[in-house]
Image 1 (tube, one colour):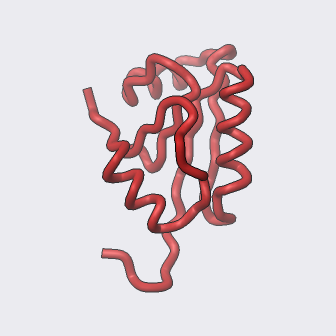
Image 2 (cartoon, helix red, strand yellow):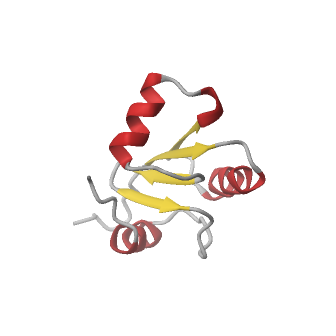
Length: 101
């Protein structure tokens, strides 16, 4: 249970190929995330073993794909605004759970 008034910080990982859609979601998340949330962008054009492993672990087969806290997975361009809030996080947790393979 969240404490009232206490903001949780989240780790946001974006898998990108540098295409216009990928840049759009990267920019949108950057603008909408709060100061406490971290954003990491993985460029799949410069694939490393670590990125390959993360993609396999998260079941990513297309980009852009956004992972939040290792348990939320949003693929493509979402139909909601990326404005950091506990309400958005709860909605994403419910509607976009990461299903482990």
